[in-house]
Amino acid sequence: KSERLMDASAMSGVPAAPLLTVDEAARVLRVGRSLAYQPARDYDSSGGLSGLPVIHVGGCLRVPRWALVELVLTGRVVRLCDAEVPVVVDAS
Image (cartoon, rainbow, N blue to C red; front, side):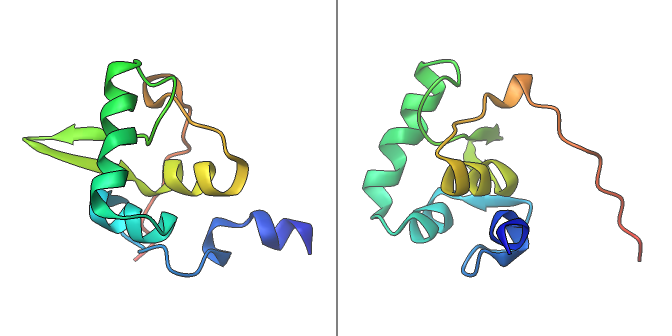
């Protein structure tokens, strides 16, 4: 049962897309849009040491789904530039 709790797919309400908007991440975190943008800015200014993990895609901020799931399940903020993420291959 504990393995199921740690399974990211068990998190209802998290969109399946690999990159989420800050608004989508805010809904998962159950906070308002403005409140979600503050930790996103903190993440940028701290060099990834604290806040909501985001990447820049053009002029947009995006939250990697796996990093949001890690934050929600463990409280750990991942530093994306140091993360080792397994390659996901689409089997279709």
